[in-house]
Amino acid sequence: MSLFYFHSGQDEMALDRVGTELDGADQAYDEAIEVAGQTLKDLGRTGWKCDRPWRMIVTDEGGQWVCELRFSAERHGPASLT
Picture (cartoon, helix red, strand yellow):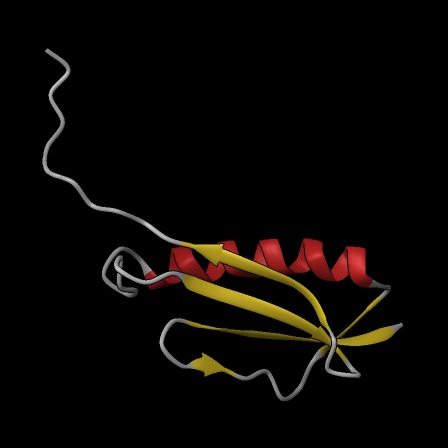
């Protein structure tokens, strides 16, 4: 088992100082996808700014990047299908 850290945010990153023990980088990547999805769901459409990406950076216990997830959104006026 290895320790991985999940840092996230937009303008300022919230640093994970506790970490999560996982079997390896593949499991850390899978966990990042699940945690990012739940976090964005919890934030809702008013909880994050559309003009800048929300990011999650996963690092190992040595501080090396394992992966980075980036999410962005663009809001447009009402769509017309006719």
